[in-house]
Image (cartoon, rainbow, N blue to C red; front, side):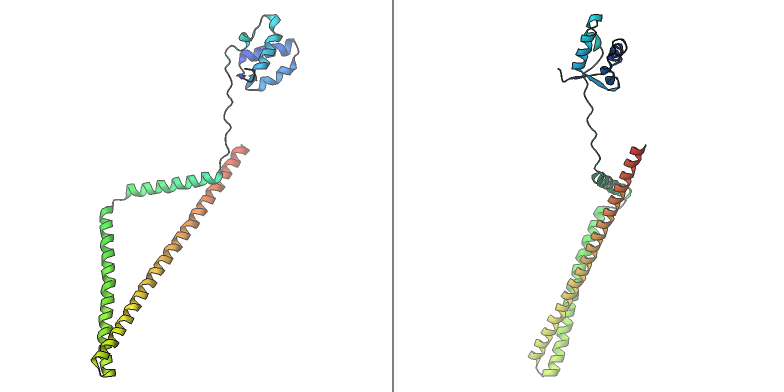
Length: 213
């Protein structure tokens, strides 16, 4: 009980003023500017006023046990900026979904058809290249070596070489595409970092303005 504090009411102020003005007990004056007053001090006040038939229950009438407010934790500027940026991205994403009238199932079907068409085109190009080079190789081999068997072998070598070149070009194109995607990821990461840092600066400015005001 001795560690409890009570809210400072007008009733308590009245009795403190009585002690300060009549009995010159200035030591209680400092409590007038506080939001609460310790129970032990209230006991002292009641003892001082006991001869005036003023008791503890009269002094604390209308007062409540004081619970101090939780301290306001300082804002983590970086976390707050990231939170704001993610909320902004989420809002933009939701807006895009709302205004989009495109049938996603049709897009998926079109993408699958495009993928199948691209794969079929690659296979067809490789077969066409192989067949063309084999035919050319057989013709040139027959002319050069005067033997159909050697011409066939030469044609197969040419065909295999051509297919190898096609495969190499395919992987080169795929690597180039992946490189562009990686660049876009890095670029987006830099953009995100810039936006977050910008928001951090804005939050700090707002905090400084609040402190100044």
